[in-house]
Length: 516
Image 1 (cartoon, rainbow, N blue to C red):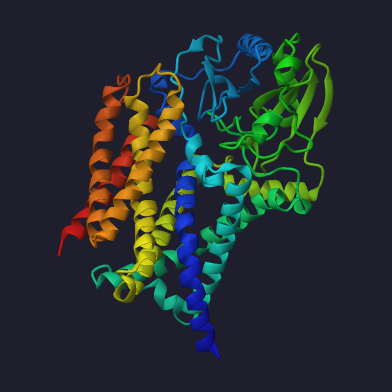
Image 2 (spheres, rainbow, N blue to C red; image 1 turned 90 degrees about the horizontal axis):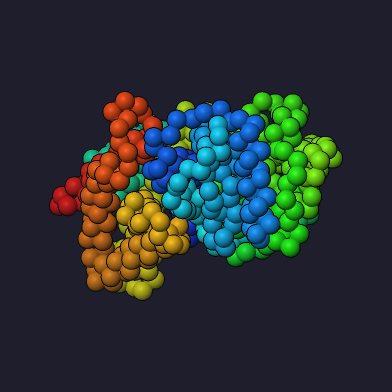
């Protein structure tokens, strides 16, 4: 009976693991990079490399509020993100149909800071959150993938339950490739089992209210987005039209979240924002306000995602005309607070840098573990099905998500620095570069697989990634102000060195592949 159960669980683990794994590698890779979306956005705006953070003045906030009001009078659904340690400038942003873009201002005097428009780290968040496929179908796919991961984990535990402790101590990297891949897959799966279960469960809960409204907790799971960790431009309810756009769009607005006005309903701000800001900080705490939204004569000072462990949409509403406090909105009950805790655990906007690095490393290893599972699936079925169309398609998809996706992410960074800074529509061109390179990697995998040379496909893509990773650091030095390169460990150097590290790993894998 037990052996029959293990056999059935083995079949379930194998097929659910492969079908779901193709999607989960994309989700985990995007999620790992999205942990540093703010830092990636700053790297992709090299004009900020010489900027020194300064405290925000009341005059600057009032002046930026006036500018935002003028933009709303012109038809833009503008809102304000406030400075944070991760992104120490004020931004006025709006949704242009594809991404949240806008202008940047110094927090001490509201002086405009010239920065290039870029998709930034927002692309990777969208890739993780909805596979860049829109709020409904994209969320549906990620929800199914999260449930598939829980099924794969459960079946894997049943399969290896008898030897679970011995597997923790067993890793033979120099054994046969099949054995080495299996050992690494099992070891990573066991060591990072709590992390993967936690991320899969919280991810499934986050998307559940959108797909099953009867379980709604009043917040549909997307943290504030944009350029800073305090206030992110993807906050729910920026506008009805934003929530209905096909991609990359935020979730449907929560019932308690203010909405940005339509162009014909916008009103110029007549009350200064600074007194409202200080009143909100008195309620939520110093440094806790991250986003300023406008809606039909009201101004909402919204609590930042990084302000607390629970990710909620608490805010104060003021009259736009005279600054009178209208109401305070908090998570209404225990269910909503529990949902906020699960979202905080998943997105960790509140976390200090070491914990975000721990999440990042865990996510990368989880992605590698799933990639190894895909390779094990191919190894198992190659002897009997190597020449079938289905096997070659599976092999091509595996190449595309395991090596093609990192290659596309690297091309995205290269495009950011090679495209002219003032090029119209440049943020969309960056994103198109990402998807074009990813599609080319898929076609390359298809060509190599259908010509019985899949090994060359892996090898060539690993080599390309290693080469362009090594060249990213010189590219960065040539395309930004590098006066402080040797004196501080900033986000630019951190991105360069991290990419270089992954490039070294890719080169070592490349060397292993070319060894007979």
